[in-house]
Image 1 (cartoon, rainbow, N blue to C red):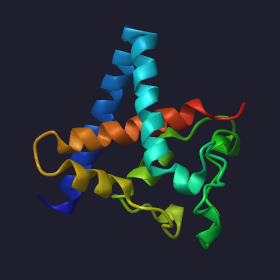
Image 2: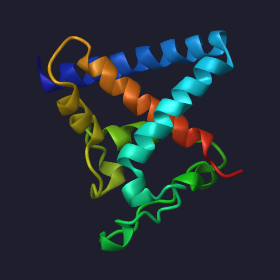
Image 3: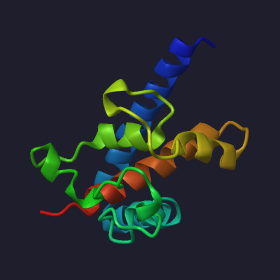
Length: 145
């Protein structure tokens, strides 16, 4: 498969999964919403809090060792005119698609790391997308008003 086709396939799968999740979450109610957010919160604390801090303010225990201070993830909506930049955040976390506007990459490529953790198999990409989407939904839920 060519890199272009892989990129299109990845985007199509991500878009389809997101639409599916949005439809399911709207129909299923709060219990499922809570489960998605709980999974995203767990992903955050397992993979992001070391740099971004438990409260996502950019003050994790590793922050002072980094050359660039981690972002305060509770301010993403405020810095984007009051709207959470869902897909920008998704692509930054995933990291497998180079986004020139993001500049130098200072954080792990979580999409690749999640893929290697999941191993080879038909459900690998869906698992990776689900983990990233849960994390993005969690970050959306902790935005300062």
